[in-house]
Amino acid sequence: MIDTKQRILDTAERLIAERGYAATSLRHIIGEAGVNLAAVHYHFGSKEDLLDELIVRKADGVNAQRKALLERFEAEASGGVVPVDKVLAAFFEPMIEYGSRNPQFIKLMGRMHAEGLLPAIVAKHFQPTLLRFTQALRRAVPHVPESELQSRFQFMMGAMSQAVSGRREILLDAAGSAAAPDFRQTIRRLMVFLSGGLQAPATPEGTE
Amino acid sequence: MIDTKQRILDTAERLIAERGYAATSLRHIIGEAGVNLAAVHYHFGSKEDLLDELIVRKADGVNAQRKALLERFEAEASGGVVPVDKVLAAFFEPMIEYGSRNPQFIKLMGRMHAEGLLPAIVAKHFQPTLLRFTQALRRAVPHVPESELQSRFQFMMGAMSQAVSGRREILLDAAGSAAAPDFRQTIRRLMVFLSGGLQAPATPEGTE
DNA sequence: GTCTATACTGAGATAGAC
DNA sequence: GTCTATCTCAGTATAGAC
Image (cartoon, rainbow over all chains, first blue to last red; front, side):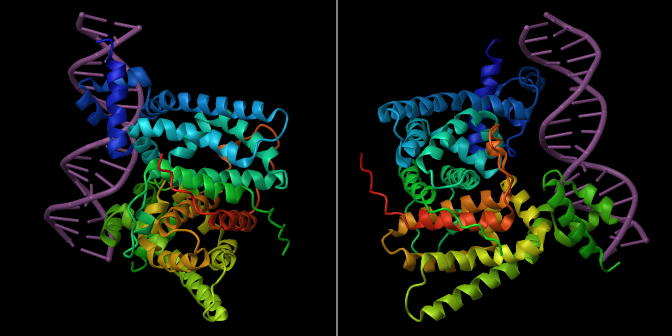
């Protein structure tokens, strides 16, 4: 059948979003998809490459929107500096939009984070977008030295990763465990948090 | 030999810090430790439980110091509120101290994060400490509603996780890749970043 | 160019002898 | 407490049918 590849992709995406990457064996995927084991390696080469394809087909659209939105803000600023909050909006709003309409994508990203796969994925597929945004941030917070800005960008990715994961288990807070906020609200909170963190004063060079 | 258990622990810690958890097979560990495969399961039950023991014997001291430092600050405030920066200091300074004298611990934590194991570990072994610190934070930033404070705590853990990992790969920044800052300096930067993020104004409830 | 059947290697786990 | 032997399941590789 000509749609073998597609069936593998769809089934893999669903199962990985539900159970996680490591916990989803290729044999499980091919069982549900009704294809042969070797077909996976024929079409994708390896389990890891299969995952890559999943991510790419989801992330490319979001990244394009991010870039477009940032460019619009830059055009509106016409030579001026796009403020931090707008840079953050350009980065996160497309994700909110996409995620709100595509809950499986959120679950998939959450799984990727939970298994420590997000950084590698980000490094592989988001690099050009991220470079674009560091440049914008550099202009938005000129009081922060380059080296520290890179650190803050790392922190930002870590916080985002945690936010996207949807995990609340870190604080199973016997006390007032409030209802879990939805994706949109969580990311909004993240943007406020990051805005505060990115604009903090520069850290003094500890020479002690 | 009675020190079989100890030899397994030491060898596992070293190998996992060097190569990562998933990449370190039990057969590799027992090879270097000179013990039998079944001994691992006899003493620890499973590979995962072995990891747990590694973490516990490292983390307990740090957590005790954190708690003691926070309590000292609270005593000094004598009924008043311990400011955010001091709460953060109580949390991170013991880690800086321990990490600076024990580089393998940092590598181990970095590996744990890189493989997505940190959140589970944190949830298992750091829960009481974390609860203690959320209470202190709640008093330090009373303008942030409980639900959002929990979100911010999640973000904080994510940022910390990323900082501890020592990864720079997210920004392999063809351009000015500054020299990697050392552990102490990175955590100091993290504290400044978090201070800004935690004290940000509350996020408006988007009802759109 | 697509797919199937089958085999290979290495992983964690376990039962039972000593 | 320790060790041998074995089990199950994973990802991967290949030979060959269509």
